[in-house]
Length: 196
Image 1: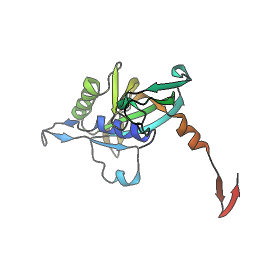
Image 2 (image 1 turned 120 degrees about the vertical axis):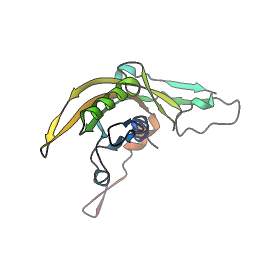
Image 3 (image 1 turned 90 degrees about the vertical axis):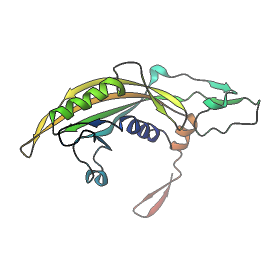
Image 4 (image 1 turned 60 degrees about the horizontal axis):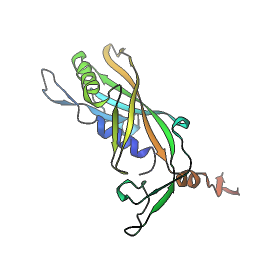
């Protein structure tokens, strides 16, 4: 999986597994969805959490230039194939990015709302020193809570308890991925080819 999709998957995995309790169900699962895609809207039932990617920006404060040399195969960038034993692998320093996500919680019951917040603040999303494990490249990415806002509302004469948390995940893109993404050879406009 490429850049951004790895972080999407890891964040959804991290947020999955929260349960809340009430008189009817002592272990009600909290669903986790991406934004408002049509297919997932049909399956949403309160309480649930939505994830939206709201910003991608180059992290110039973490940027380094040059090359990395390593014979430590477990820390090769994703997509790099290790050479034979004992050989040194060299690649350019990756370009650092900040991925900002909005995590929104939705509940009809105030007790569910508080239980979700307790789970998030208690162990899943902490203000400092939290990491997000990305299995595709076997790394722990730094993750920070940037802010939280209460957004309770009324929908069809019923209360909806909602919280919006903004988190930042440190990520990186290999220089080869940037170069590959910029190589546009042909553009098709209205079924007519135009060389670039």
